[in-house]
Amino acid sequence: MATIFNKIIDREIPADIVYETDTVIAFKDVNPVASTHILIIPKKNIPTLNDINIKDTQVLAELLLVTTKIAKQMNVDKEGYRIVINCNKNAGQTVYHLHLHLIGGRKLNWPPG
Image 1: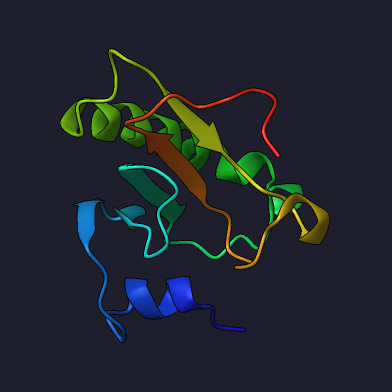
Image 2: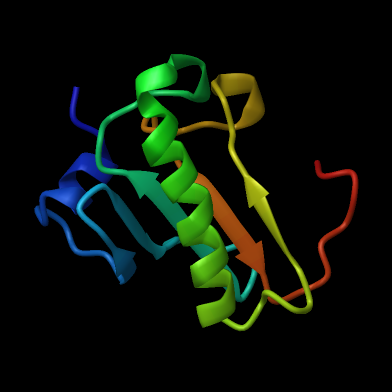
């Protein structure tokens, strides 16, 4: 089943893309919770974190490396940022395509809601 993220990858709908490789794409969240809120996703459709396997090791490493690059690009690397991966409904996952939220640019409280 195609998600909104598949449509962004396929350029069927527009997104404010900030970074892209052959395997990963990152774009600004349309409903940001901070001044920096970027979604980083694999181009391979992995529905949830529960669905990863050993074959996904390379793309998972790339997701984290891309995250640190974007944090520097957005100037939130020094003050701090948060990476969030929601897994399934009770955690708040609404799009079933694995994605990381890079959130920064303001003080983030702990524990989260």
